[in-house]
Length: 179
Image 1 (cartoon, rainbow, N blue to C red):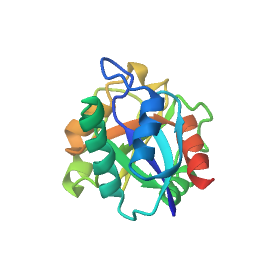
Image 2 (image 1 turned 30 degrees about the horizontal axis):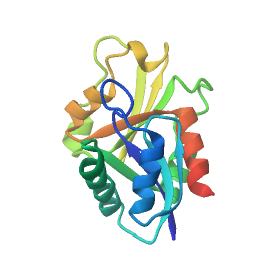
Image 3 (image 1 turned 180 degrees about the vertical axis):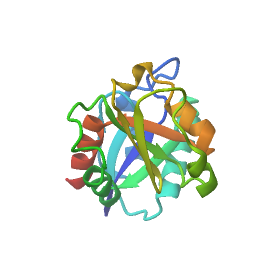
């Protein structure tokens, strides 16, 4: 068995509502074990014999559509990947406010030309580092709430689906994926 975390984009914000009990049931019904959710924002840790994260993500997305008529992007990371992410934030030593440190999880690694062209809009004081399928973000002057350097902006500029979690959530999910 391998421990994974599925990250659902846009759940329980706006009009896309999903009870975490339904998410746990769906993931369990797919044959995964030790299923646990974190917060109400579409984070679910589980054990699986399946070794392909893309197949896991597609299966969860399909089940959400079939059973609840929800169409949401699902991204999956292994426990090992989450441990590397939690241990590899280039901004972790600069700020201990988890609302200023975020990670955008990408469905796939973006094209190098798009990464090279990525820029912070306007005169915002945001630092970012793209590493494979993650974008580490540091909102120097405050949280992401007022910024134009958003998840939607990253998706548009990088051409891939993304979902963003604050640093507190990333660390909690890494711990869930390690246990």
